[in-house]
Length: 219
Image (cartoon, rainbow, N blue to C red; front, side, top):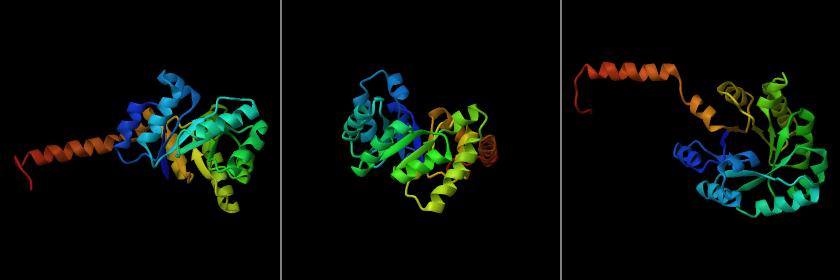
């Protein structure tokens, strides 16, 4: 399973890279706007921090031909970029064209099995179902992840399943259990996922017990 950071915060990305867990970064227009810097410079810096990683960058143009042109320009910023395009009927032909031209596409805002199957048929690199947003409308996001996993395996599609809109440690757990190829996780959720009270209690007990020996150096 690949772990992507759902952020454009350079400092956070740099800090998490040192853990050895990070396989890439997913950005979106909201993340880039939050940084308040030149988006192109931010994207290039992220790509340079993870030269072997996968960096998703989303289009902002909505008119199909303008989107196509922008997608090409985004892809040219670095070799490790995937272009994020919303899952919408108006963009199917653009997605197919980009895929046929060798541009790796991550289709975002996926909310159904049928949408997922269509995108797999187009040969995109990733589909990103939004778990949290489905939960917002009382639909089990984890169920969709499992359905997509089975569909991809049954039809032997090469498209990978990227669980997105992860809002809690529970969502992360469910994405892993569903067999997602990748999960993109906000920094706050990732921080919470690293903590378990029993781990902390165990460390405290081992430390206290060892201290009773009053050994200054070991081994």
